[in-house]
Image (cartoon, rainbow, N blue to C red; front, side, top):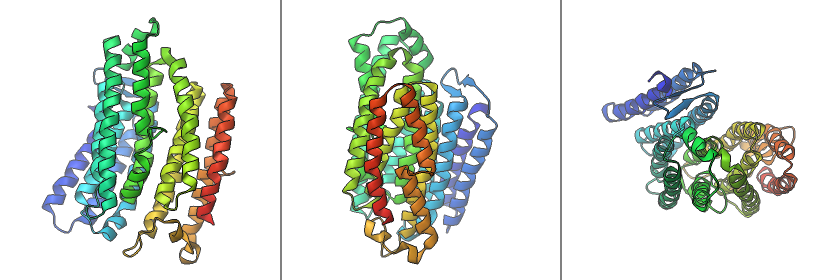
Length: 419
């Protein structure tokens, strides 16, 4: 239990939030403080595992540098989402207790996705996260857009989960184990069969839905637009990081002997995702919808590092996810600031004259947009450069060319926001 101390603290904090929500009247400030304190305490507990590399819970969880990195991303994005949410919930006039509880539950699921080295652990973590987001997406009950977002996310989420589970069950049938190290050992000496390739395709499709890669992205624009803005921010950063953690665990640790097969499929996905994401974003007038397509394109860039299938490639993908966390959440923070009782604040025209009303917010938005576009000398540019360098080292020049062209298209719609 010592090794899952951050998760236990998060669970205890979430249950305490729910309890205080029922017992104490006029409690919004207390609930926010307790939720944020829970995340901070979990983060402090997490630091004690620096340099640890063990497998615990009878081989179900790995406590290592990889898990620690993703848990830090998850807790930072959770904390920033909570800070964004306090004023937003007041403006919307909705209950805070269940909202904070669900945010902490989603973070808990993500933490287990980062540590899971067993297909069942990964699945339970994924479901804990997904069920929380299904409710959070439709949290603004009077809003038809929010209701539509929740229904679409739930239906497509359940459908993608079925595909993912089918792939996992085939993998279990072929290898006789759900543990990733045992699956890797069982497949090491086997020839490729059609059954194994089917399992890989189903797993890629299932994970493609979770990271919103094209053509499995159809839920993302509607859900991002309809969900409460802080939930959209959390979904686009925390959920994406946890899904990439799960993807890397399954394919890099569980299926190293099938690397050429999944590498080829992910290369195709990366190309289509970068291209379609950036082209579709050009036509959007709603900023949340534009950032949804932008988020799809960024998933394509991260896939470039994974396609390189080297340690440096994976490291580049992790660095890019860390940088993306601050770029994306920063942009959504400005959009949340613009939300007032009479203005939703998520249309492109709502940005007009922002410099006159709030120069600091306008300057911050300028930096976030330039960073998302990959303009030097921002962190977004450095992250993208690191990713493309690993693809060059793996001699995937065609992928680098497509990524650069896709980035050039992306600059246009980020500059639109600035203009």
